[in-house]
Image (cartoon, rainbow, N blue to C red; front, side, top):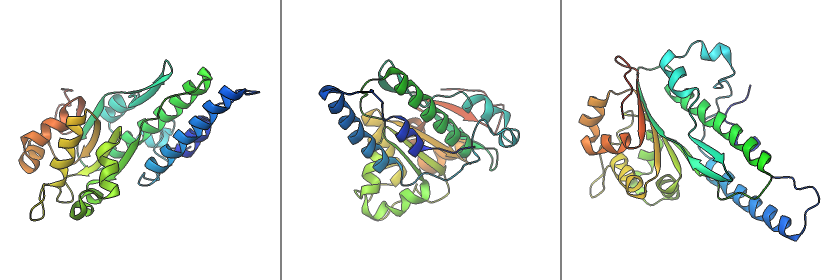
Length: 236
């Protein structure tokens, strides 16, 4: 079983053109540069959950049925027609232990493998890979005192940002003269049209009370809501 194998994803995207001519070599060099940037941006804060894999039946049996239904076949990004496409985001809320974070992780892992296979099958140069940053709210709060730190800048501009454990680390408060970190980063990403995925042990009402209705709207925009507290009705 493998977890979110970004190194394997990177290796798999090194396209084999047989006996390359000069154009092929230029494409290969461009691909290598893009993959190096992918490695630099994504490899830092990802969790190490080798067991969080949809092929791991012992794990999936313990997941909430809604997590399996909503996240098992979800494609957060894919490589189709020679270009990268970002899919719908998710706001996954529910009690501790139901599989919110690891379900998101496993879906991202599955998407990386499927995208690698699609890229290799096309056998041609590809555009910039999507950047993905995975951070807990605690990590973002730690960067609050230096809002334009490298960590914050990466999270601000990543194609996909995962904010895990929303509601656990005080991201709704701010130091003197600063904007609350969660509201601030969501405002930037919302304005740029970037995809944000979040998990939380808070209900939608509690998120709105803690972070404000505007922050909740930005989390929900372009997202499918997986609400494991109540009836589980899927709304946008």
